[in-house]
Length: 438
Ligand code: GLC
Image 1 (tube, rainbow, N blue to C red):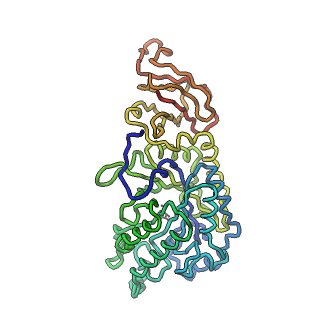
Image 2: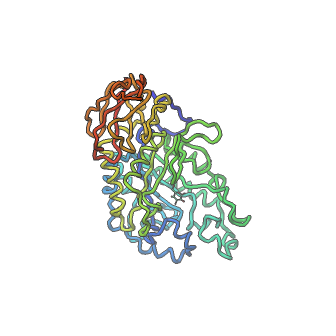
């Protein structure tokens, strides 16, 4: 068994740490302006202007079964959809606001179809729920609100009552966790008490504003075992580094314990569909991100931003296909794997990443740069029972003790394991060597 023990949390993270790879979906009205999900804020849009999107939102090509098929093919095992993002628009038929998809030309409960489709493909189901709300009349204007720089911003806050909003959130979370069967993940976003950009009366918000304790208790009562992130500002199950890749296992800020973590990443620079954004990640970068994540004990939640018509555009499909092609042959180095044991990690050659199966029996060497002829693994001699390429299960011959390659000036090295590699890199973005350990 892996010797790494993570900090105990209230939810059931066993399946989560096994599955390693999920799909994030950012979808809402912001898919229409198609220039970032924060567009209302960035362009300080008034409600009247944003209402146009509500009026014309018509995802006539929405077919979540197609999304689910692609997610499954990519090797993703769970999914998290923005039920409500900061704009406040609800993607389900909530009874607590009219600002919902059923009142747009979409005319149906989009969350319901999503849940059914992904569940049918065997993926675990998650909801993202924004703690911010740029539409709710009781959410006070603060530095993360589109109206914060308005000359009359302070007046706008008169009569707004965050306790009403906190109750609204509980009502909605109750709906989401009651009406859609078993929900595996609840992804709240986000707290910003540290935000001091505004004047004194515009402070950032956090757990007290959300009445987070009550909100979390409700979620736990309705869906025991559910995994919840830490972004309400009260620690739960999940640390969620965003748009950067930790280079080591994430640790608890105070105790230093290892924690359950999930990096979330975009294919390009935005979460919501962004038509003119061009910083799409290369295939190599995508696969490396997944490997890097698992090699340091984490999960990867990879985001798609569907178009307002409800399909995944060609760039997103292509990126998913990159994962599908690689995972089809190499997923064994991802599922049920984690950071290699400390004494094994000492043997890590340059330009490689290890992952190791939870039971410790299999070690995976991911070749980020394909070496010529041989891979030298110092310290692994005597430990390996069999070696093969993972993608095609073809044997890789090896020598131990350095006897094969002794030339002038090279001394015999008892610890050295030398794997013979074909001169040409196999046609796999990142080839993986599977080592069965003794
Ligand atoms: C940020 C952004 C948001 C996005 C989220 C994903 O908090 O506000 O737009 O949904 O990150 O992690």
